[in-house]
Length: 456
Ligand SMILES: [Zn+2]
Image 1 (cartoon, rainbow, N blue to C red):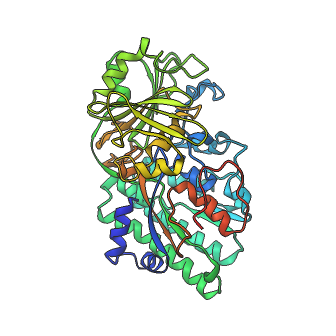
Image 2 (image 1 turned 90 degrees about the vertical axis):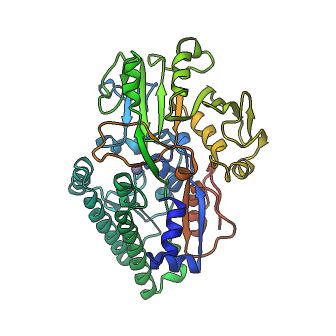
């Protein structure tokens, strides 16, 4: 859900329950995480961490360490049955809010560690079979029925059992946006299900005297924007005479390049696949310089990020040149070299708060911090692409042809709404602030090492 679309829909009077929340509390625009895609972008809400840092660099990724069996080409795709591996893939030392705030419930949460089986709504085999059918048959209305059911079940649980923390993902807005665009009538139908769910939870809580103490927050993990062209990235590389490993055919063990697309407006490309340690630029340029130059010249490529170490990278844009980004524990420097691809000027020694401020009004809100955390992730690729507007990176194998996408670094994907039922102490900045704030609301001490901070 894009921040501006939600604000407009509330102002239009389409969403009375959300409108009441806004009137009593506050509606904020915050930044999501890169890649701005469901799954990885849930990590901020559930773990207070950026996705790359806890082991989810994308919806699909290649495993250099070879812990993942060769049968799946040493790759992961959380679209389909491998979604069950998310909990084992995320950093076991980083706690989830479900482990800290008990008892919790989670509905359609991609990360479920710490939830008892009975408290994972939408994980029964029958339910999974239904969602899989809706997905692979491209049944968009089917997703709305699923949202209704999830909303009712969450409201029922909150009404009938003592729950400290509940996380509910309603995915209908995303599915309908991919199929019909975020401004379509069916997306309004999906938004109304969110509104009805909020109305039900609230009226139950008011009747039972729980509302005065309850925090009810509505947010999104990514935005959306129109796609007019699909670059078949795997097909393009095949045309250039490279062999690739790419989903759904991730079995090629002698491939040159792994192409792992998320959202579908971002991609990790992995090179020198036989190597267990990450290779770095500029050394990679000896063998792969030409492919990088050719990719950068594609209309579909907005930003091309080349990791030069676990604490530095180059950011390229075709007609805007290259800048270097370097970072340490809590400082970031972005320095234009042949140009200023992010359009924010030279920025040296910023803390994460300053790095947010200098980018939030730009075309790439919070890009400095987000790129740093993704490049620094051990499971990230060797070329990271953020798609140009109107473009994404998968032309085939989507059950619903996408007319709208997300995953990239630009505003429409990174800016998301956060609606709070009471005003916070200071304005929230990032989705990563949500989890520590929820802990603060519950009086639970936040664990060390979180990427966000409480807005309460
Ligand atoms: Zn999506």
